[in-house]
Length: 495
Image (cartoon, rainbow, N blue to C red; front, side, top):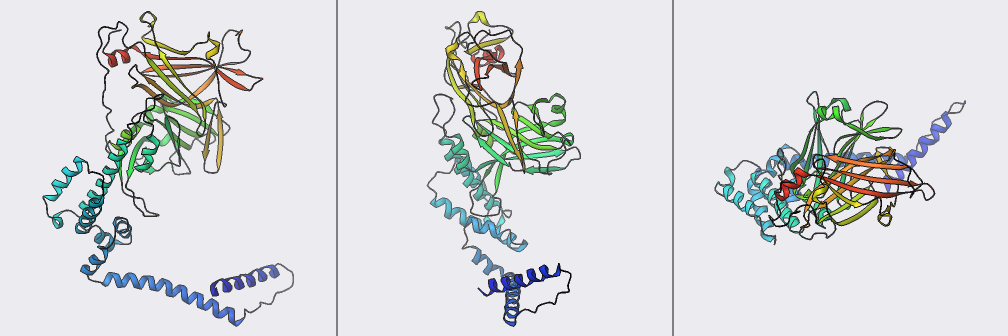
């Protein structure tokens, strides 16, 4: 109460003095009452005593024998011990002691009902062959965090078993990623060799993909100076340490040579402020139009094996997806050409524009053309299948204090399942819509637009008509093209 009253009175006198000093007549300084002056002195004395008491406490702790300090630290749990290791060099050295972490490891994992993975038991066996005090400092600390992370990871992976009948993907992908504390980091290197690692400014989960965005804010180098981009998934240990970054284990997901990709980068959209450059499917860089610096970097990741890709690789090597082939069939003459199921989502960074599934897609052997297998989901000739969109095709963006919307751009997430309901071709990438010059349509009176996506595995074409009166897009044609080589490799055929 004394502190609040003193600060209020002092502020009053200063404001009064400032207001009088603006006048033409000289101002006589008003002396503060003695009671206020004494309170101010008391506050200042209290602050000095508070600071000196903290310093004296640390000095006293540092003068204690190491045996007593170890005894004190032995009562701390993992979170507290990790926090105190950031106080100073002495406590960092003491808090990394193997004996302390060996005790925590045995106590906490003894209570843990979740079974330790076999790989942890193997690491524990190797470490146990060497006496605790003969190990390098921090070995048991690392083993404790590694074991906790591995237990959480195994628990999360077991929850991926429930598969959606529409997407063929695990229903709990987002929940698992959050429950095992997975995040992502972007490492940016410039031509001079300087390197910086950044956490995403925002992450937006959609039905079958997640969009990650890193804003520039003066931290990212100039677009022309970026040499490489690396995306890592990071598994963080669950610790109650506010203000401190918990230990994490990194898994390389992508490494891009930006200098090579810049030569073929495609501008997929722009507004008054930024220009969107598509480096490769799923990755765009927003560049400020007036100064060519980076406004943001955006990655779009498909849910197919996203958890495994985010946690099971190493810091330098990505996770290698297992090759799962369907049963061999030499009886069906068109094996691999029918039974496909498509789930496609169009969305911005916040809300869905459309989400729809199509089953029983097929291609007759005689229809294979130009090395592509054509799977038609919506035919222009069948009006009943035409689908109105629930929103406009736009891609909103946000960067520090600025934000905008790029027209005729959105994010596409495509999931194609084979006849055994297993993911066959999965894509998540920003796409652009262009005005299409087509003959006059007798079914619709409006402008025609086309979204065309293409990569080494196939193509996707979506055609729209803008209904001016309804102010709405209608999807009139949707066709997926898969390369014959991909089908032959997957189904062991020779089409």
